[in-house]
Length: 342
Image (tube, rainbow, N blue to C red; front, side, top):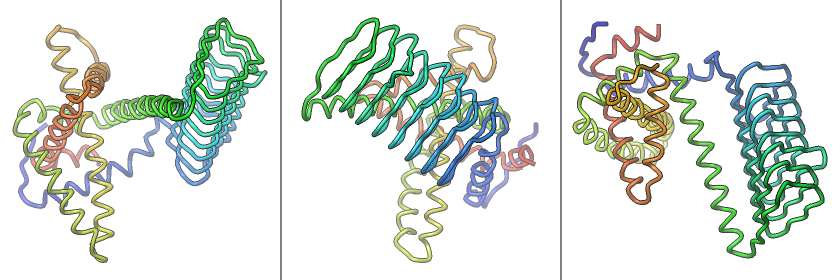
């Protein structure tokens, strides 16, 4: 592949490439991505489903689901895992894998392998069998089902009319209970977001490999330069969008730029993840696929982000590095990139 440098119009190119990417991603055929005020799956999907909406109904079998919504109803079997966050969540059918749920009111009526649930009011009904363990944090918790393994509960009120291999219950009261609940919710939300970014990276790498690897190569070639330039560009972009947003004419432009800017920031650390994965694979002389290289780097970077205090600095550096590399790649290789999308 021959790279050609094109000068001028870098901002225009930046906008176009990310607009194209944002429009293309929802139509990737390997995954079903659904969004809207009312989302309903009424025919079987032999694949993973990612859905977001005011009301989300799963009325036909799917492989696995990641859902964010106001009211979520899973009324058909899920052969894999369920990750869901919402106001009102009802899981009325069997789940082949684990359930990870966070919400206001959560009702569980189907079977599952494991369950990790945090919410205000949580009810495990008599029709439910959890074949391994369940961890629950909430305000009011009712278990009328069967937990074959361990049942761990942290709640203000707990009623257990069902059965479990063992029960570990501690009462949470007042602010302490609220604090514990918020920590549980934050941890579950972090897991959901992390899984979402992992899937996003795999999708982009699988369907746009040459473009992805161009940026990753720039990350490795000039890490210090790209970090400094990326950090400066992020600050300038925020100032520019803020100035545009205070004017009537500039406000729509600021919204569009903000959307594209957000997409760029979300992708930035993914390129750095791949670069880290490549370093690890090269160090240990491992022969593996690009997807596995990305997953290795992603896991390592995600763990680094969790380091107290230092994790924030690491995140700033990683995002700045990826952002700078992305802008440089767009500027230097525009013709090759757009040819790959045609």
